[in-house]
Length: 197
Image (cartoon, rainbow, N blue to C red; front, side, top):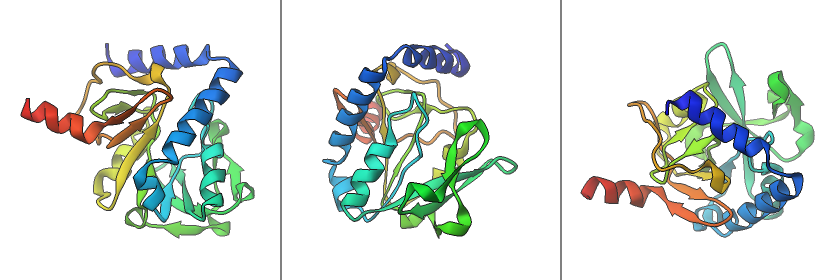
């Protein structure tokens, strides 16, 4: 299946999830992410503001604030298809932009460079165990993490979002770790094993 077909298939599957399941599974994922050594050791963490049916990141952000972490969230620039991250310490620093997305208000936040973030949580629709993903089609994250050398790329997703193999292109940047309600996948290790095997 091509990327568009896979994306639509998984989005359709996620749309049938009940509110109760969505909230309970999001909570289970957030609890596991908070136990990740990379998250525990991190000072600054990049997190997307979720839009259902993405895993609820509002829960995670509130917990990270409680732990004294700096949380940076992205602002998209549609004309250039680029992103900038800004540190927020309150949801009041967000505004609703196109497609009901919530983004930081730059004038009310502190800009943060990619390599100032210890972990970036990367969203997406479809993933495989090697960390390759199908996003929402804009290519924002693939471009952004191209020069990210500092820390780890982590993704939170529901089990329904994992398939055997995602079709890849040369510019795709895979994530290092996937956390779902039922599993933690070391994608970096899987890629190494795949190259050696």
